[in-house]
Length: 282
Image 1 (cartoon, rainbow, N blue to C red):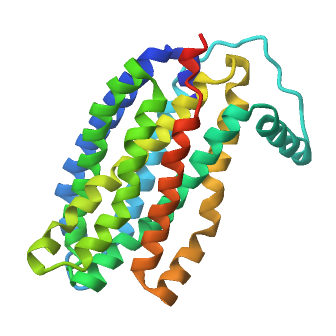
Image 2: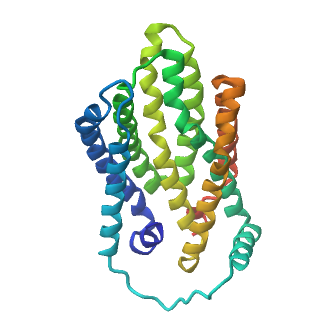
């Protein structure tokens, strides 16, 4: 999908596509969550298999829609490579392009924050004794955050570049775990604002899309596929260590782990000040 966008959408229009796609996607997600999830979560333990089944069904529809897209052939021919050759290509890309290598490092540090995704809901339940039905509100707020931030950040990306957007949103991502810790340890009247944590969690899909759009601006079009593959690997690679986050929470509690993740994302934010802005080179 990102490769197709690189072919079809001009650089200064990709933020607009991000805004429209994320906003309308969030609207439909909010409506469906409000209509369907309360019934699925009735009872003491709720029923999660309809939630995951419905999500899988929507992914299947998206896959069918992708088959209907028409893509014009080009003259580029990818040589067949072994897995070792593919790995060498990845390492060569990182070795030869220092500016992209730094962007990949920022992406990898950011992805550490995604490890906390499964733990925000248990944190609210364990520390603040929220009921299972609170998930409905949190899902709605999270999707509202995605729509809201995409509407704001899309035009900024088109006008000023993806680097400026990363500087803005990574700072908010770094604040999210600290906000969760603060609210979970606060008095009752403040703990009711725990939903605001999920508003900021809604940033994550926007950040990932900005990384992909940023990547599309760095190489020539013939290298889009390879660069996007490397970026996706750098963002998803650290997630393989997600069980460590859960184990660390079991051993040390939520607070030190959440603070550590916040510090890691803060480092990613600081590194954005060393990134290249591709539009300055054109």
